[in-house]
Image 1 (cartoon, one colour):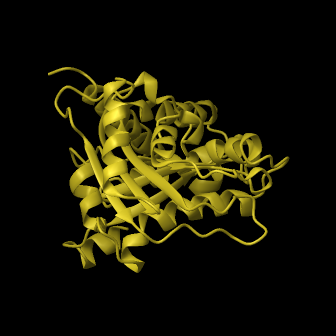
Image 2 (cartoon, rainbow, N blue to C red; image 1 turned 45 degrees about the horizontal axis):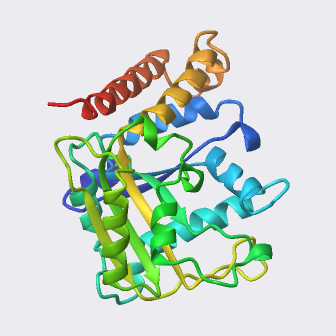
Length: 286
């Protein structure tokens, strides 16, 4: 990322970050790796879309009925979100969103660039609806934390910006009505300094699914990217796991043998503590 920042300094750099989960952990040192990576890319990425394996594992287990979700199941769900976000690169649409617009609409300050990802509808292939979920249904589902690809409760924070990316059989009139209904119920709380906060993209290409996969084929879907102060919960959980190991300096020798210094760990942890504080301050009234 550092090299890309040097060679392509004028280009917008978007990143998908997948954070670890204890349920399907492949390495004990994942908390170290996550903190070090976030710290090292913080200054070089313009917008980082967050997903975490723990949230996706739970979705696969509870919503898709997968007894023991594998990386294949998890990656297919992440793939749906990535496909939705990048659909405008591949297909024409009445309200296509350029990738540069993500940074413009979702990042109020350079360091506050970690929107979380939500996808709807998430329907098991075994329990496909006979009747398709409406635009209103899938829009409301985006604000249900059980559809979030990051484990945190949005009700404990405030939204700074939301980008709703629809694909398939969707028309602007239905989207406007769905958003108006959400606003009228006061179920979505925005920060005082950004009261409107919705950006909409529509692409008419319907979503596709893997044959024989866990997800049902649907005619319309939406991926929501939301920059919210609630993501502090995810940072705090990750920092806590880091602290438990670092307090004992457990497994540190493997990194030191590779030429790293202990100070790099302290610096990375301090940077994440500052990031937590930055997000907390965003939710305060000015």
